[in-house]
Image (cartoon, rainbow, N blue to C red; front, side, top):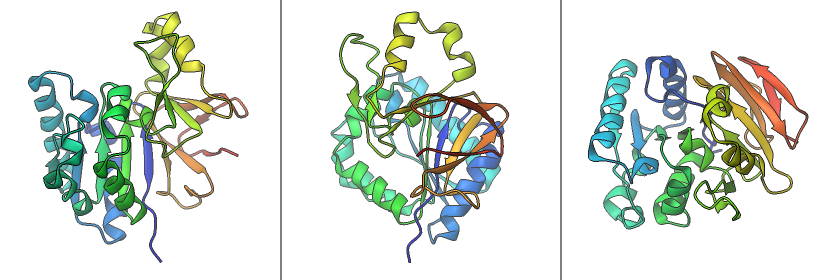
Length: 247
């Protein structure tokens, strides 16, 4: 029986030493499920940023790959045309861990939504690879992504892997710098959505630890800070090691 991979929603810290333990565990789970020892980075959320910024993500990933003892595969999927390119799609199945890094969540969702590349990513995850999204990468996995550029409009359709969960990354710093108007957009989600705040250097993970399950919607907190349920379920704050169930 094929085992679905782990899924991690990360508040911040992708490819940094603070996330090395988690990223190692995610990769090793993928390997134990028969996937290659390969760490696949997808920087699409930063696809509208400078070449220097993309090189920054690639270098961070290379350093983390060396620490973990894996092979880095940096996939420059920067637009929808890239997400239809067979040379990129063919590399998805060769990864034990697939990772979406930060940037613009709406751009990431719009770029990959309904594409063969996203279909291959989801398929590989369902066949045992681990999947992680940090910051924008986590937000884009929801069914509805806040539209920060059209504040009065509805959200942007997300990749819909976690259709009823809206992650808010960088939560412990988020409301210290975000404008009130943008905060209202983030907190205004479709009915039935659970809004969760994930602090920096912290993640919410399912399928990695004993007792957690994507099918049963049971997650566990990892990292140095907290995860906060803000609305849509019983409000609370959860620390590292605690389980959260979204009914």
